[in-house]
Figure (cartoon, rainbow, N blue to C red):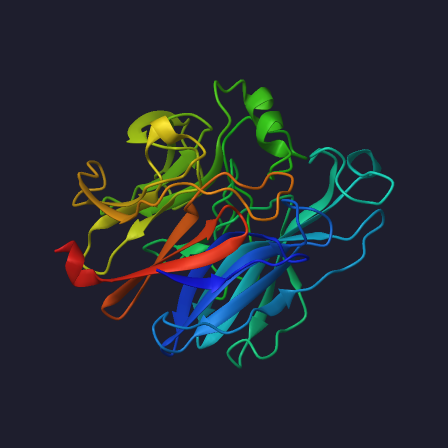
Length: 357
């Protein structure tokens, strides 16, 4: 385990991290705020490592502070993809309406309602992150925390909460088409404010949010969904993301945390999260579960099991987890799990893939 970024006063909120690599260099992106979760002025940054995660650069900015109509915009990290030698960073954005703000134009009592202008945008870099293109709009009315991932056909899906847009543009910059669960209003906004609105519109028993998917050899895409309960649910697509089934409860346990699913190069499926339901919100231990068939995730590896710790700088929505929002990436023969600590530090765990034999 290595610390990538240790928070300080004025940069005391860090969360929603992802990791990827290009030409042997690791890139970790995350959301960085002054103190409170998703407050006005939150930005997106990244750090790099050229020695397999042993040491890390100071964070550089992907999306900086931008003024909005009522307060500064909020930027959230959706992750970085690598395509054709370029880095493509995705950013979730919105601003808050007046009812969410106090007289200082900060969040009022943790009220995250009244989002305006929610969207996902992207910036590209051809020089390893030294410079970035102007932002381009990817998809309106969605803000999520996983970058687009490819299906077997090469189609990219942006895994939202209850909507899952797709594109056949391999760069993931154009041609995005709306898709998702049925029964949502045409103007539905798929962000944290929309969690309850989506449940009410569809009359769901639970809130569905923060999807992550894998695809089995029969072509079925399995979008695993956090539910704010002790189980993950799943919605499935049999037409490459065009339509989605009604969600069903799985036996996969959850400690109320964003999960990450995918497939290793050897064909095994993985699920990464904090699946102890007796420790909801504590987000420990962090467990990598493997499956031969995408049904039974019956091999479990603990990547970290230290106890939860309180934040050094308290803030709205902070704390909540020793291994927050873990995310897996493989580079060569090494695996890397990036996570937040108490929503203020960013850290990474490293282990050889041979440990999973």
